Length: 190
Image (cartoon, rainbow, N blue to C red; front, side, top):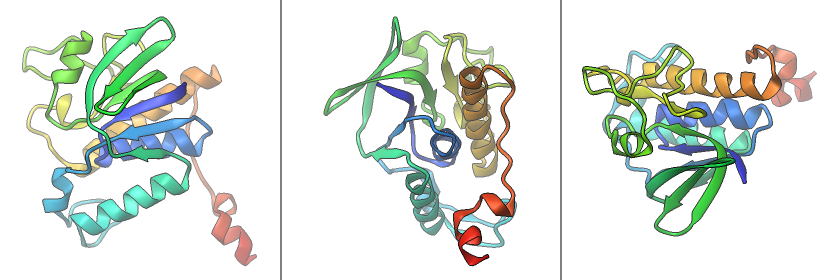
């Protein structure tokens, strides 16, 4: 059983995976690698002067894997609650996880089938912690924001979901803040 299953591998899903895996949670990402990011060019992403969507995705996927996340190119057909968390069903197998993060862009069907409440605008209803009405299920990005499809907003939502999960796991408010001494490549140079 994984700690966290993430459905979707765009900026929201990969951001959630990065924070979760980096901080010791067994994390798996399910994605078909067909994100709209491949059609994008980022000029408005803080800290990035200019980068093509394909290059951005290659870096983000590599960074997430480097931190320990398991990226699986499998399409998810169903997410169901269980006594211990969730079962994620793909065309290939079933996987169990204690938490699930839905990061499927504007595609809301999995969240709706799971029983997540929606807003009057038709988006998935979440709190500031990105948790849905289904306990331990989180929704991020375009599925929770009507017509706000921005990579940087989605990445922030994914990070918020992961930090909320980490707060639950640690039993106290958790935040992820690195210093130069935390970075392995910088420590090696000293």
